[in-house]
Length: 508
Image (cartoon, rainbow, N blue to C red):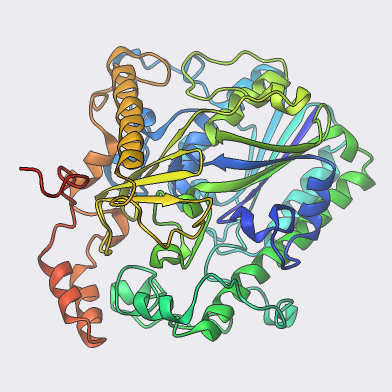
């Protein structure tokens, strides 16, 4: 079986037609979904980019690998200590290594290892083709690498090609000559002018008044014709969303070229095609625009569409992690799932429509803030350890069925539900830390950092990665824009949240 994995950076599922979006952003992804299996509740266990792809390629949670950040001690896979061998062939071998064990030829088209010094994700790849833009290259740059590879190899048996597109990632710089396919389409209605005004009185990286990273560093924002410098009203919100959606549509054109090329080579029906993402992209939710800074629904939920041999078409609503994909693919190629993986195969869902969903998921963010979230039924409980310079309560509870854009915190009105979420989180955390101590499942007991929670290591280092060294510049930005009280908060605060009495503020 041939496998083509299309990795779309920063792609949130609800901006695709096959997930119900009313804009025509994804005709080629949609046609793949029409004959394939679409997963509605598929989540990256650890976000953003480096933690997510580490989890995907290793099949292990960040709390086990130690990778929850883009820099500092929590950006590298933990050493196995005295158990380290001369090669990674044992119970912690990667997905690519296991595919190679089953005679697959593996290739990677992406600048990602260079962008994040993520050399560990290359473990098991026979070929790496760096597209050399560091994540800024558009689809017209990426596609020729994949095109050449497929023209040379498509007719061969048993290959895995991983192609990484970046167009939905900021800066939303689709060529201007492409136009705006959504010029006449209204922006999503949930974000009202009243809510925008509330956000403008608040603060935070990539918030309504501080859209671009340069506002944190004291530099001028880039000249980007497709994006405004601030979200001032519904009109500028539409401009922002149009930029994101145009990037998706532009990328989708090139995904169509890949599918057409497979058809021309006569192997499309014999190829398992997978479309997914490393993380999503908040578009105003919790006052984050065009970035992936939280452990919430829109940073962690990603699309998963699978089409090809042995795939039973339909829709699966079960809860799954991205770490569940490695054992799934291993089972589909008749390989052996390593004992050191955290993932749980959902191959029987793909081939026989069996319900393999989990009861709940725990999600983590350690790069822009330090958070863990619990996702179960329609609920999302978000626990903040470090707020990353935002106005967050220590605990936030959302009913995603009624409030998918996370506008109303229900902790005070639904304390029993919040307690349930905290119980699930504590159970999960205790189990994972015991695994770290004993070396079971994905835990590495021989690691010198094995008994440390990597999110707490990030806090011990002082700040989430992208805030480091930027406090003075951002305080100045807040003062210059009339937000003196917020400037004082950022200036004096550690931003580490006291969660002890979050549910019981009157208890002593």
